[in-house]
Length: 171
Image (cartoon, rainbow, N blue to C red; front, side):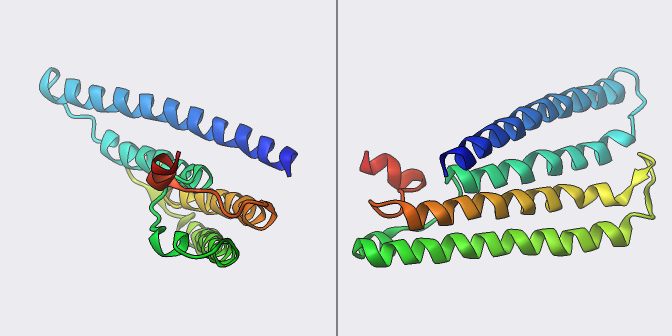
């Protein structure tokens, strides 16, 4: 389990670094758009569509990292009012449900990629499938991270770990 967690730590680190570079690229694109519009009086039309793709490529994988780092939205009051045994199984059920949601993102996202792959994004001349590829990647990451969370929920002797803001108040 420790090796699996270290591998996922490295994977999360790579996702965050790539998202950081993509965010820098997004800022540069937006700066070029403003410069083109107000200084050159010639707005680069491709930037709007490229920015949309960049936002998807940044937000969705980082949201998957949020599943692993447990900074996603969760409401814990009911679960934490229960004894450790029921807490553990509610946590397992919630993490498994998140994993199934990620699996649905992979399956139906891949179907969408396949449906629109032959079509081109007019201003970028790339496949429309790139619009849905971040959803497939994010879903796969969510599945992987949910598997780890379920294993932690089951194997941890002290019960499910605290999440998000609730963890800050407990410490």
